[in-house]
Length: 190
Image (tube, rainbow, N blue to C red):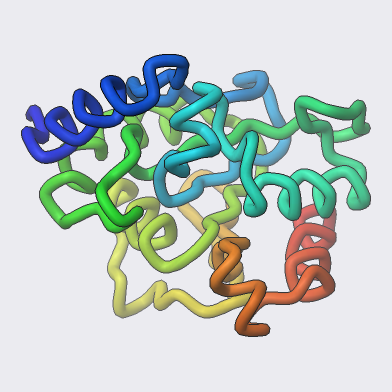
């Protein structure tokens, strides 16, 4: 399924930012990772520029700092526990707000990630990522509501952890602090 709005927006961005990646952003990290992080979508001046999830913007800097402190590996550092990062939506959406059809259109890519991921924990960054994981796994949203620091057992012995997205807006408003995010990430190792 093709998302015309995202395709048009990507073309517009490629003209405006000719040095940017401006294509779908693939997952980053080893397939054998202990942790799969699912974000919302590539950031306009982050992953859309670099082609690597959560690089080049404030969300990524906070996320990578917390992952490193908790002992996970990220592009800029080593770590004891490998991490793989992907997004529910593969292309940057206008105003960083994908519509339902775009989330559904990207579901086969998320399904492929979830099918091949064998690690114990999936960490959803925000409501949209959480719902995309729950929907892709065919689970009930009612039985698996999004809540910061929520933890759910998944079929096959994996678990899903939730946190608010480390967006600049969530951090600036105090909805998510570095300590809150660190507490959830440290919970991955339990």
